[in-house]
Structures are given as C-alpha cells and as structure tokens.
Length: 262
Length: 351
Image (cartoon, rainbow over all chains, first blue to last red; front, side, top):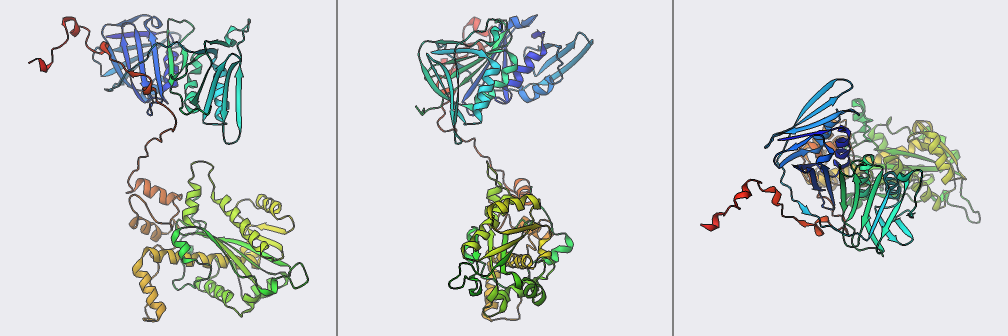
C-alpha cells in the first residue's frame, strides 16, 4: 500500500513536464525511502533520474516495493487539473493496476479524484557509479537555460570547456560561432545569482544542445542548477526539487559526443 | 499546402490538353523522363540581333507567364516571349489573335505555337521565346525539404529571373518586361526592378489578357506543358506509346489516340484523382510526373493504401550513449523482500 501526500501538487507537475518530452513510459519505483524514477530516452543518449525522498511527503507510507508503470502523457493530462495551491495525495494498492490521485484545495474546499490506469513496463536499470567530477558549476538555472537556447541558434552542439579561467560554452555552426564564458562570482545581496565553479582539473567535452535545451525544461523546479563534468563520463545536470536538500532531486545525464573538435 | 485547384469543373475541358497537341521543340523527351528540370531557349531571330557596328539590337518587350501551377501532375512551365516593341500590338493581337491561354482552345494554342516554330513565318522571324520546365519531381523535392523550404513562389520567381537573364545574355535588347503576377504585384515588381534596374518592369494581375507579349508567353508555356504532360503519360503507358508511334508512321491514320486517362492533372479533376489511385505504388507512390508535395498526393500515399514507412531514428553520429558508461545494475531490491528472507529459490537446475 502506497500513500504519499505532497503539499505542492505543482512540484510533481513540474517534474513530469520536464521529462515527458524525453521519456514516454516509465516506472515510478516506490519503496520506504521514497519514489524514484530512472529512464533513458529512445536513443539512449540521455538518462533521467528522479528521486522524491520520503521526507518530501507528509505523511509517506509505503509498505512494499511497488512499481507504478505510468504513461507520462496521460499523467500530464491528469496533473493539468492541479491548481497552484493544491495538495496531492498519491495512493496505490500493493499490486496496483491503477494509481489514485487526489487533489485537494484547502481554500476552495474542493476535492478532485483521478484514477490513472497503469501499465507493465519492462525497464532496464542502469547502475550509476558515484563519480568525483573534475568540474562542478552551480549557477542560476535561468542563466543556464538562456545559454543553451542562445547557442542552439548557432549550432547543434556545444563544447563546454572548464579551466582555471572559468567555464566556456562554445558553439560552432554554419552561420558562424558563438560562446559564453562564466567566471566564479558571488552576489552578496542575491546569493541565488552566484556562480560557483569547483575545478580539480581542466576538462573539455562536447554535447548535443538539443538535449541540454530539453533538460532546461526543469528550470521552473529550482532557481539553481548544478552541472558536473568529467572527461569520458556523461555530463550531469541536477535540479533540486526544493531548496530543502532532503526533498530529492531531478538529474539528467547526457553522453558526450565523441570525436571532439579539439 | 499550395494546393490551388484553379480549374473548376467548367475549366477542366480547357485544361485538358488536346490529344494531337503539337510537339514543340521545347519538349525535351529524354530530360522529361529523368524528372529533371530544364530550360529551352529558341534561337534569337536575326532581326533582333545587334546590327553590325551598333551595340544594341532593336528594343524589345518581353512577357512572362506560367502554366500548370495548380496541377498535381506534370511540370510547372514558365514562358517568356519577346519581340520588337512596335510589332507587339499589330502582329500578336491583330494578326494572330493571341490571348490568355485559358481563353484560347487547345487546338488554337497548338496551332499558334506551330506557326511560331515554323521557319519562314513572320512570327518566327521576328519573335523569340524561352521556357523553363520546373519538373514535378523538383517542385516536390524543394517544397518538402526538411530545412529551408523552397516554396513554389520562390521557385517560380527564380525561374523567371533565370529566363530573363538568359534572354539578355543572348544579346536581346529588352526594354520592357511584363509579368503576370504571382502574389503581390508591388513586392514582386520591386524585386525584379532590383535585379534588372535598366528595364521598365510592369507586374500586373491578369497581365496575360492585357499585354500581347504575355499572352504569347502564356501560349508558349501552356503548349509546352501540355506536350510535356502527354510525353510523361506515354512513359507511363507503353501501349499508348506504340499506338502513337504507329499513328506517326502513318500505319493507321484513322486511329486517333484516346485522351489521357489522368485528365488535366488538376486535383479537382476526378479523372486525375482516379488515375492517381489506380497507379499508386504502395511504397514509391508515383513517378517523376507527380508533385509529392501536393496535398492530394501526400494524403493518398500516407493514409490511403500506401505502406507506412518507419524511419528509424537517425543515429546521431558521433554521440556516445549513456549505456556505454553506466552498466545495467543488478537490482536486488526488485526481488520480493520477504521471499529472500528464507534464501533464494533453488531454481530448476537443482533437480
């Protein structure tokens, strides 16, 4: 039996909106520590990993491991009914064939209830090793989104170069080339605007911008984004589900392009 | 889509080519079979060439018109026609009664074209013409490009400019250009004026009935298109080709070939739609005679009997996959929690 009450229904809506263009069907794996999701896009270039920790819910109850096979397009349709201040409760039996979603508006004294049919999804799970990344950048998520969409106008791919001078996003395309360079800086009044770069060794990698722009759909989730790079491993783009670290995260991994121009 | 069924039912009669249409020299049979676009220029009449000692020949006016914009079958043909300015009215209008090709019957059009192409006639001696044959295959390919779509208007404009440039480069002293409009006359006129700054340009709606040289250009274009359509049809129907040949050899003069079963080639013509239906290859559709970008053809191929082609996701070359880095993890959590309390199942091989 699963019962999970999420104060902000919008949080789940934002997560689903962020990944529904990358993944169509996937399992929400529920256990006593929370609700997790891992899925790859069709071409296996990108991987999404979501974790809603039990602390994100109040209360949270999950007696046995349950896999909820959900079509994300259908889930989006249901979540479209969620209003800004709605409270969402997810309920499922132990061997469920449907997921019950309860949307409560305290203010309006309204309760909406939906049952979403589930499906059996045979999914491969990848083990993601703990990685010490060569470079980690924490920056405003809106800024990252702007860089990606701006460079998308120039080229299909972006080369991210992190060295002691800062971090450079460079795109080389048919019409010309462009780049954006960021340096570490802190804004005392608005810490959310900080750019923090941690670097242990210089690294240069090239990625498909199409995917990065796709990842940026998670931007409404969080003011900040963390980008981690190491040579020869996928790029990690992480958004926290709320400012509280214990709520969970939405992570995107993107395989680098091979045959660097360098 | 640019599907503009201009021919209403009443027009279909006029649009359907005459079966014994005159085969003008602008029909390049072999090129038509390959589905490629081409241009044909008539020789410049001696009277229009610069006289010895002078730089410029006689001042000419030039008309531009198009034929076969709407049909789903066959090429779109652009025609230009030029002759000395003073001859324009008396020769074309009064003597030969050139008019908009849509007003003239196929037989009259064909006869006019034949006169134009017969050496020794006044028409042949004082007028020159050229056509640009935009093949159905190229029209479709340009309109269906995945990026930077090259639409019909842009293709038409470029064909027109290329034709006029071709005429100018042959030494004809073109002073005035009259064009039947595609789209907004003002914008099109501006664009042409930029390309040909020294020429007086008039772009107008219904120019083909206002200016005799445009009427003549429309006849050149229309007759070329009709003949090209006929040639393409023969390619699809070998029996008919033989028949035609026999008739040509004079074996059986009595036997008139039947009309083409695809009618006018317009999407509004039931014969055309029927022909498309009956002659569709489930995978490849049709040959180079068909404009695949037309709604009629596209819908038929995609939803009515065509096989659905699944295009595998193009491998993004040079991109590695996450599976190259992360290995499939053994998910022990997947197994039933309680089940494993008492040890794992022995499996069949134990017995």
